[in-house]
Image (tube, rainbow, N blue to C red; front, side):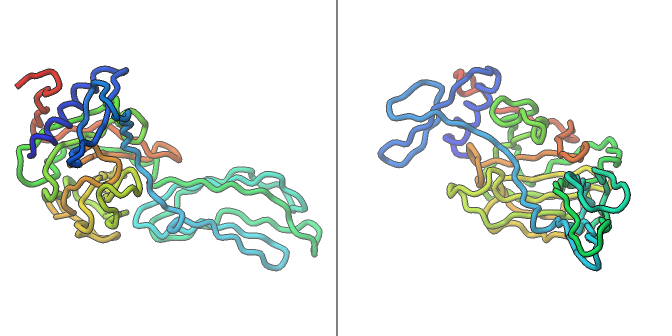
Length: 299
């Protein structure tokens, strides 16, 4: 691994132990980018956030149909994973009978589920309502099972640069228990657990903006948990949505896409806790060391 990458990763590891640490980023005349914990002329404060953004709006739909004085609502799920949905109907008017204000359902993978039907009390007049539709990947009733994950890469050994509850990005619900492992770009990334590929992103270029998570692969396991492999190399994802993978199946190659401090793999396990995804603790099946603390001069 290039020394500059090690220095970057070591600096982030060292600073993660100080909640108030500030990291500065500057680029010299030769185009070399440096990260430091000391204020430097022309340097800017570097804010690192490993947030996950997945656009499901094109695969999870609320279908509304009006016919013969009635309005029907149905949830359509085009994903290869169950989805929890909630429909809230407020301001009901010209509706026959009493109706629940909140409808909650689990929609299986690749399925459509009816949610509600509003029938006009006065025929010829439209029913009135205000709708709010929410959804989240996964089934919150699923029970995670204990599992020790094989290392999701080939080669190495590589080192942990940020672990659970890291101060730079591993503090929100979605990523609190994630692990970042520094490795050269192009390192083979493999499935650490069998499951179904639910979502992939493969078109983001390194250093060109895009979503914070960069390219990624999300795999649904048989206990309802999901493993997510982030910051993958552009064009390297070799699996498709709906594909079943086994332990060791090639997924992609590591990269430096999205909001990334340097080439690394961000690996996280998540589950639906009730209309929200949250990361959960996990362990690898063998020790993974941490980088020496270069920022403090240790070897």
